[in-house]
Amino acid sequence: MGLTFLAAGTSIPDLITSVLVARKGFGDMAVSSSIGSNIFDVTVGLPTPWLLSALIFGPVKVSSSGMACSIVILFLMLLFVIISIACFKWQMNIGLALVMFLLYFAFVAMSLLLEYNVIDCEAIMAFVGQGQG
Image: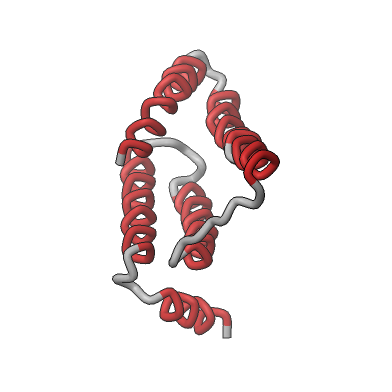
């Protein structure tokens, strides 16, 4: 829970700068800033400590009961986000904001249910597999 609040706290400066830039009429710059900072965090912020730890202490073991399913759900959420934005005709408004909040809370809830084995990962994978065939 502390990491969630820490993550939210580090995102507030990005939010403020994105809002200020968007109000000046540079919406594309605001969106690219928010996406770019997250890409930087994932490609540099996460691997650097893991690399240092692996160099000093040896391999880092990452274990999670629902990691594979979380990745699938994250990909599905990305599709839902793109579809939602397209449904709102690529314009930010209150309806899109509510959909984004709903998708975020759905992802967090699913991830927690998977992590604590309330939902079986194989059931999720079977459900996703049925949609493909």
